Amino acid sequence: MTDPARPGFAAALSNRKMQMLLGFLAFSAAAAGTAVAVQAPASINATDRAAIERIVHDYILDHPEIIPQAVEKLQAKRMSGTIDANRQAIETPFAGAWEGAARGDVVVAEFFDYACSYCRASLPDLSRLVGEDKGVKVVYRELPILSEHSSDAAKVSLLAAERGKYMPFHKALYGAGRVTRDTIFAAAASVGIDRKAAEAAMTASRYDGEIQSNIALAQKLQATGTPTFVIGGQVLSGAVGYDALKAAVAAARTK
Image 1 (spheres, rainbow, N blue to C red):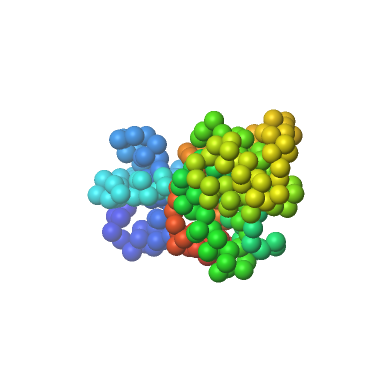
Image 2 (tube, rainbow, N blue to C red):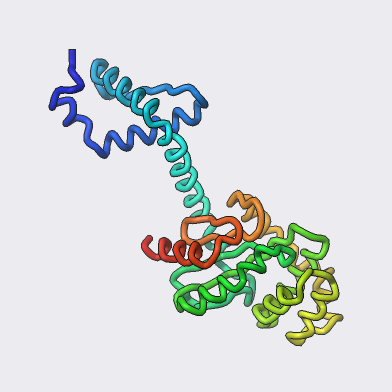
């Protein structure tokens, strides 16, 4: 009978192979719920396979923390794949709905709602990011889901983007406080968009495609609210703060 303690057996299980096997088995265990079902690859002979299964089974029971770690890693890998498959749609701005470097090496995409206080709180962090990092481009994606005036604000914002006045309008509306028709009109007027043009934008159907596309992208990214940031292969949820945004940008650069 093969002894798992023998040098030959140990050599057959390199650290990397064992790590890969543990990761796969940990995910399998998590997917199975509380049951820990361990099965080694069929290419290994029956005696060694039984020994491997026993070792890994015992390891998982002794270190159950690897199960959520493995699941988290798998989920992150799947999300990175989803981002890659939709990257062009995520990182291509609508008209002038962006700031920072026109040809930045890292794109920060924010899905936001003007009625979102956490989005408002994130504005200084984004401003600081593009101010300090000349290689970052921030793309703003309208996701009007929170209030009865969110859609009106989003459509006037897209009008401002078409007119090359996106960021002034963006900051003016956030600076106006709670989103109402009056604050939308005031923010629009502050950048030279009259009330008639703003009202027309609110009822225009030409912006519906952009908004629906953003909603569909947010669903693919499993966004649970606003703000949601997409940076490199990561999705960050909520007002994560400057340091987290900066770290995600750095991580995206390394890849």
